[in-house]
View 1 (cartoon, one colour):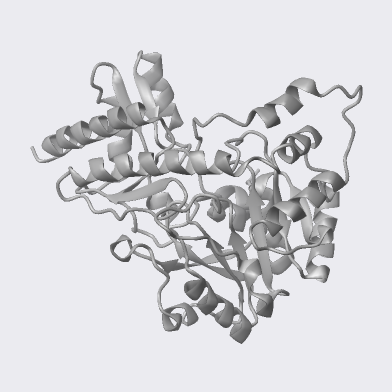
View 2 (cartoon, rainbow, N blue to C red):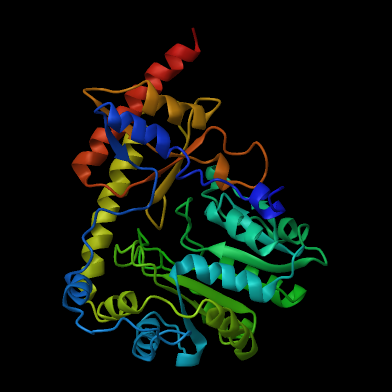
Length: 399
């Protein structure tokens, strides 16, 4: 029997699909520095881990489909500290940010509809769109100008009668770009003009550098009925395995529909919500220390990349990723070669080829994404291996 069109169309994750090469390298005794995935080595807060260790209920029961009331109430307080004023019914807890994005697509789009997304974008947007039967219309941005949003006329050229939403990631994965309030206002005005939703992925709000600040799409009251925010605790608390996120909107009708999808999957994980709730009142110093650590790591990676001839990159202003354009033709081939053919003292490095973060065919073939999520010593070793590997790879290709 034939598989469904979804099964045929859905994209393999460019972040994870090279893992067999990494696993094979490890089986040969090679230590692999993983810069391919946004899995921080920062310790998950003790407050969160204590919940897991001390949970004592005799039955792990279903929770409410919209999430535990205590957690949603505390999220209202968390967001207020970030200049986002909400009511409890504006929030539905999801199984990670991924489910929040899927729900946002389900309630705003019909199969065959289109959404505009600046590229390069978080690669799983492709998969989520395929699941929802939605077509992504890519809005290409470029490293040369810091992946800034193009002018409005270029955005409007992508709008058709099938366009239902503009989806942003701010701060950006994989670009590290942070959209200013002025840039977001342009998107807000376009959404009003063309009656579009704005879906804003704000998972990395805590991570901005060099005086930049995060602005939420929910800070624009003029589109409160069109604005949808998706969020996750994965990066905020270095708790990627907890799988707790939320979808937020002040559009009551939209949230009523989201709740029906939430009821269909019953409920988000109970213990993980309690663990996330324990972190709501973490001291400000917790985030200040983490931000300072990521800033050091960013600077190490950026400075090491500057030492490599003919590499183009911009210093990211947010999140914990950097895109580098390399003087090669095929970054995926290079990534595989680094795992299968290269090592120094039984060590090598893994990164993510960026081609899969684009929707436009052919773009990103010479780009890699580095997640600066390892400690300083490991990052320095990994960047040395990247530099040495690139030198050897180019030499072999030029023979």
